[in-house]
Picture 1 (tube, helix red, strand yellow):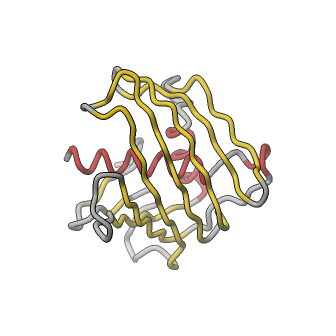
Picture 2 (tube, one colour):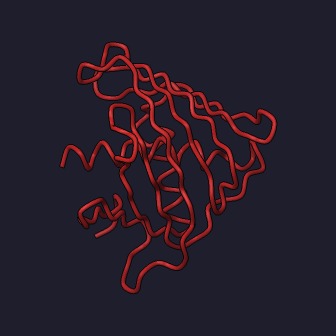
Picture 3 (cartoon, helix red, strand yellow):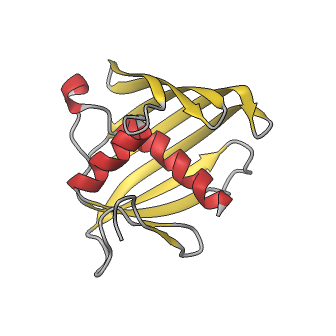
Length: 168
């Protein structure tokens, strides 16, 4: 379960950056349907990426962005998206447990259908013995959600499913 929570945390950080506020950057929301996220985190050998699938609609996409930005719990004191050429950079400072995470995510591609998010994080004090982390996520829309799949559901490696908060 701890591995699942780490994966969802990476997913949230990457998607929060990718789902930056449209009013600030004129970015399109993610396309509703099934998304595949391939995450390569620091400390894993090349080719040992985590693959996650999520069914989204406008409501679940917005809920995930708000959670990752720290709006609900007041976790983030800073969340600053800005355009840098064709890409977007998001700087954030958020509480993660007892640590303060300073996060920089650089996003390239089309956030509505296929994008890459490169996230570098420093932790003060170190989190679980790590002072920094790095993850690259490639997210792409793959088509409609599977029959019976609920918006917000996340299918983890191995087939376990996480339900979004606020849903049965």
